[in-house]
Length: 112
Image (cartoon, rainbow, N blue to C red; front, side, top):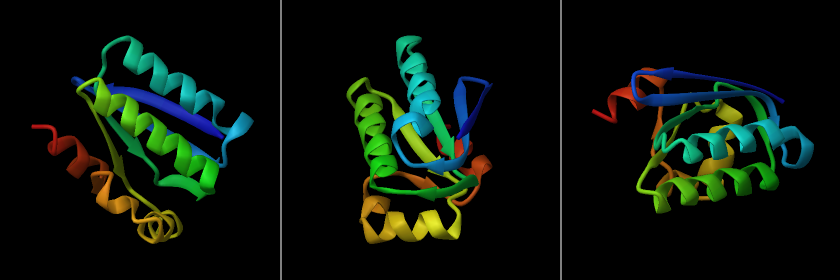
């Protein structure tokens, strides 16, 4: 898994690409999200448009970080879910937990 990170104003964008499977595959994603928390960057969009697959470990990582940001008074939002990822999120009923947006722009606008 490769993870691209950048900012648009005060909103941090994280773009993982590849498989979100836990373990070694998600170490960089974990590090980037913890670094944002450490710098008090509490508006984050996880753009999953390039994420091919996610298993239960990947879901656990998303939930873990959603809780961390929520506890810190921040927001971790999801955007650009592929059809495969969206099906997983719906089956797991996580679309009622996460704020999910069709596009990155919609997710960014939701912070205003």
